Image (cartoon, rainbow, N blue to C red; front, side, top):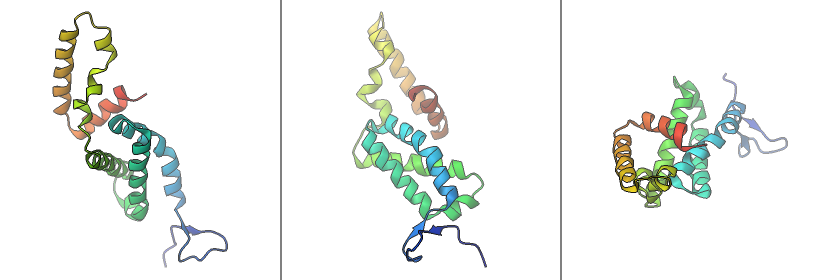
Length: 147
C-alpha cells in the first residue's frame, strides 16, 4: 500500500478537502516570487503575471506526483511556468516583449549622445536575442531584465 502524498484538514471530509503535499507547498513558497518577477517582465503587469503563475502552479499541483518523478522537477516546473506566461501573453494579444515599444525605453537611449546610433544598436541586440534558444533567453531575462 502506498502512502498518500496529501493531507486533509482536521474534521473535513477527506474526499473533498485535500491539502497539497508539503513538498509542493515548499516548492510553491520558494519559487512563486521569482516566477512572478519573470512573468512581469513579459506581461508588464503584476495582476497578469500572478494569474499566469497561479495557473502554472495549479497545473503542477494536479500532476505533482508525476513532477516529482521526472529527472529535473525544477526544470519541468520552469517549462510549465514559461508556457503559461506565453499562453497568457498570446491570449491578451500582446506583442512579444522584444518587439514592444518599451524595448526602446532604455537608459542607454535616454542618455545617448547619438540616439539614432543607439536605436540601430538596440535593434541589432533585439535581432540577436531573437536567435537565442528559450533557455538562453531565460538566462538573459533573469540576468539583465529583472531586479
